[in-house]
Image 1 (cartoon, rainbow, N blue to C red):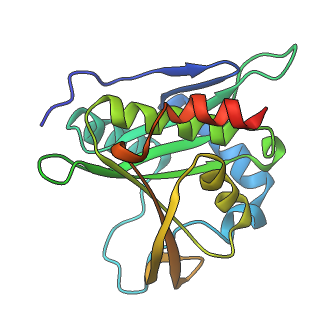
Image 2 (cartoon, rainbow, N blue to C red; image 1 turned 90 degrees about the vertical axis):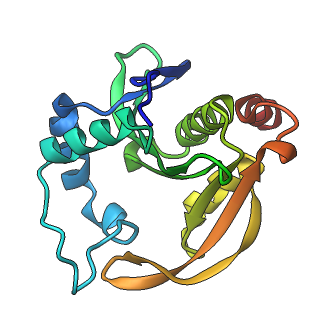
Length: 203
């Protein structure tokens, strides 16, 4: 199903979500090179028997936007405006595995430049993305997190996701099949917009 509403831009100043673009390559690569140990422990990897060829950043962006136009994924760059400074690329939020019909669900993944972690940027960005998921008619949003990823666990707790259970050897991460805990929020459980809840409880 084609997505007539893509590209989508979402804002909750000082945080903005906008479609990932090829011109983000320099910032993306700079962040990744500056903190390899931060990312290597959490990044998904290809299992030994994978037949998928490696892709360049430009190929990844083209593929993501093609799938976004087909209604399969929502790939956003996260931009942040530090006080008194210009807006800058600081991370990504991606809504993937979008299923319509009787399922009505999707999965959310995210990362941030460690330089900007702990400022409420990713909780705000994920809240924007999840509220958009419900606005376009999805019923259920999942986030899968390794049980030792304390930073990521803090995000779902702040946003009111509930722990549904553990999936053994769920995803290939850092060279091995890793267990993940799955956190869920569905439309019935959301009594107010996720962003509003986060900002209210953040104080």
